[in-house]
Length: 257
Image 1 (tube, rainbow, N blue to C red):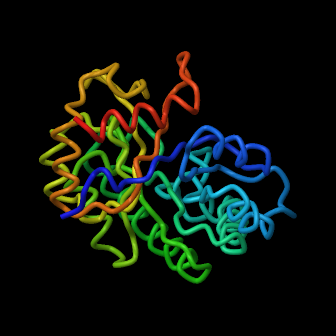
Image 2: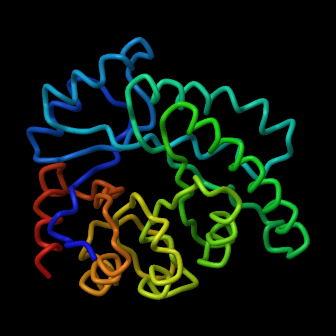
């Protein structure tokens, strides 16, 4: 069992640069998630930036669109070079986790027959991408998603995790629309190695700042402790008047609930 007070504080903030990593340190963040880098030539500089400022680049959020793992082979393969460049760049930089969506959102996902076809495609593509990540020193993390997207409940997450033993979970806590947080964590929380932290109204994702919505943060954190979660609280929130420094303050408050 882990202790919530040991969880590091992170923020998802777009492309990384030396200046942004320095600001993250000044504002008290321990780590960050990025979606790229200011200049591909700088991947090899990231470890020195981390050492200089004491902030870890924890994860890369791979592109969510216009192509997804559930798309047909030819479409997926035409886009794969984009993922590959980020995964290889992350390997140079020593970034341990890659986050990905298992699908986009399509009307046809409401059809059980088509959903199954897309699930099978997504699983195959995710498994192959996981192998590519492993070859580059990282772990592929599939994000739990809302609404009709693939991976919108613990049963579908479990099925995806079963497809490749190296796959892990990114637990976006404002994406659960079908299950209670505690029950979801009990079922698949053991696969979680990272999070996206924000709040919502249980009707749809909002990415509000924690304590602006309906999440029971004490219960959620207790559930994560019980499954021995060791990753960070990595905020993925809309600005709404809050600063990077507010992220650290908010997380410190949540830890003491």
